[in-house]
Image 1 (tube, rainbow, N blue to C red):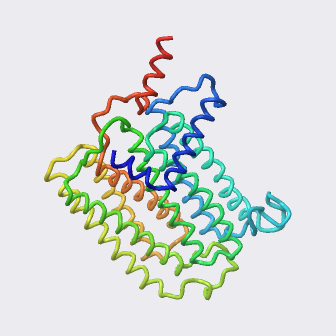
Image 2: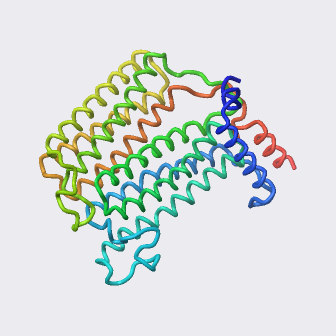
Image 3: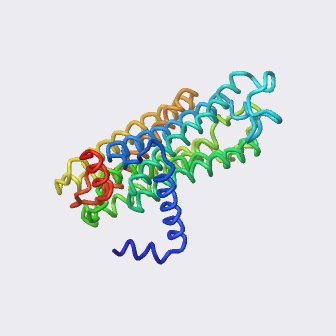
Length: 353
């Protein structure tokens, strides 16, 4: 009730709710297939998992663009080259064109994943918190596409590349939360799964991850892989790489320490198995990231290590998002088929007919 009252008092949220209602009504009238039925929680979650995988995967292909120097394989945006949406022979090395254009093309795969997920939760008329998370994914893709174009037009300035990476990690974090929330019945009540001190520690762990990611982009900005061979060292972040790497590592140790403390509290209080499992995954991801980071430090950041470190960042962010979402849970509801009472009744009527 408090959540609904807060939404009704916010004009922006009210506008979003009207948009969702319009989308639901349009889907009921014109949607395919006919008749339109609410998808099951299992299918909604599947679409959310696909979306999470796509959000994480596109950061990996973006890192390939960087380490191969293909960032200007398409030297303008939204076209690839002036006057052409597609690569033009001779405008850039064909390998660079293939990698950069391929990365751009994957955006359309991500759009399809977002649409499938959003349509599924709208069709099921899920609660507003879930609809907000799915809608934010679509807005995030649009913002990322536009900012990617700005990055190209500014010749891959280090700070534009950093600001292109960080929102992707936020979208991964929110996609992980969406996967968790979709599995909860809308007619339940929000209940804490952790005592308040552990919830605060979980927030601290997530905040420290954000700082780790930010300092990681600064390490990249000061490092050797600029995204294109034409970018000169004076265009990079003018901070000694070794100093930036030590700062980044320090926050990684903070992140690890907070998460280990959280794990100790989880086991001391014998919390739910899935919270323990999520904590394990976070610890494992941090340790693997630390190993890769140390290897990069001693080997001089070889090209092959960057995509591994980037995909590791995505996996670590996803694991932290899962753990953060498990602070609370909607429980006690009966809408276990589609997530909503109306959707469950609709599917049962369809079966009975």
